Amino acid sequence: MSNSVVTKAGGTITRLSQSLRVQLLCWVLLTLFGAIAFNLYDSFWSADATAKLVTDRTLLASARVIAEAVRVDEGGNVQVDVPPAALEMFDTGFGDRVSYQVITAWGNLVSGFPDLPRPTVQRVGEDRAFHGADVRVLMLDHPVVGLPNDGTISVTVAVTHNSQYAMRRQLWLSDFSKQFVLVFVASLVTILGLQRGLAPALRLRDAVRRRGRNRLDPLSPEMVQSELRPLVHALNDYMERVQNQMAAQRRFVSNAAHQLRTPLALISTQASVASREDDAARRDEALAALRTSTRQISRLASQLLTLSRAEPGSRRPRSDATDLSKAAREILEAYAEEALKRNIDVGLEADRPVVVEGDGTMLREMLVNLIDNAIRYSKADGRVTVAVGQADGHAVVTVEDNGPGIPEGERQQVFERFYRIMGTESEGSGLGLAIVREVVEGAGGSVSLGDAEGGGLVVIVRLPLA
Image (cartoon, rainbow, N blue to C red):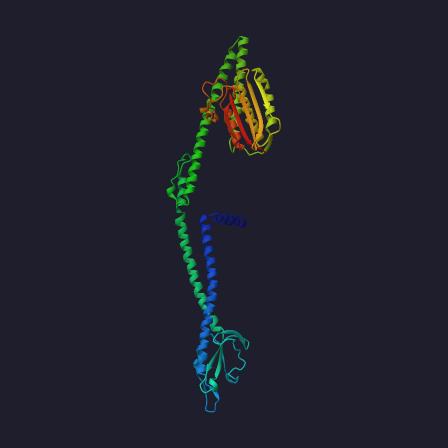
């Protein structure tokens, strides 16, 4: 039971941490609390300065009242009767203790505590210690009529900090309560603002959810704020790519089915003819045709599988070191017998290893399709030349033949799947160059077509060197 509760609590915390509303609210509140913490710190010292100022003004007023009560009698003696108001002005209900001292300019104590500490500057309050307590003390020099040479007396008044600290605390708590109300109101406004601000995003979510799985028409960017419109445009672009991919897949399946249907029907017919034929020679001819059709459909199935594997995301990326010179030599050796049957001169120009990184199997398939196409479409007694070299930090593979070539207006279309040029006599499925393009682009390279010298086609493949 306890493990289940902990798991549910952990899941709830994870969902909250991933909520945009919670994250925005946390950042806003964090900023507010940071600003308020600074304001409270500043207001504390402002309240302290205000309490000291009020205390100093009260001390100065008390010192003046006492100084004005000083007089000189007929015998020249300085006397003072401290008015009760001078001390009662500190009676604020916080139990402060008031001390005072009146001395003449020549140092005689007139009244008060003889050991009361005196500040260094008059009319400015200072914090001192007196009889085991911290006090705020202020001194005032005041002239007295009757003293020789316009003499003065010094009045020093001290009071404990109870009232001062109470005033500081009251001022700071008042500011704190205002800040707390401000945070509460700001939190409510922030929550309401987030609710209204995220409403368009929630409408976008609902609009996507309500759609059927076959609906990929674009969403309206006007349904969200300007900051979220790039997201809607990105969604529309993605759905358009998905639509194009689905259309390409449907065309691929349709074309593959069409390409497979004809040879399968031919195989069925040839098998029926061979089974009914009594003449051995004619039966052998039908069986030979059957084997040829079987090889054709086997090659078509192999090319379909290769094309599927060459598509992006169809298999885990590999980074093999492949020597294109060595691979081209091995493939040409495998096709040597077929070239000899048609008296085609096959040549290889590769004087050193040319190593590239990528899926080694798919790179070999790319070379197989290039060489197979060149031999297949070359004229009898023709030539096929394969060159492997380097240029500008790239591996360059050139396959040249003296076949019919490809018209310039169709050189982009021949890279499409199952596309074949009208009037082509050679057998083929129209997948060879499509496979080449998928493999080359997957390896970060490029492929282009050109005219060979003396007629024919040249295919140029550029791949990044390892």
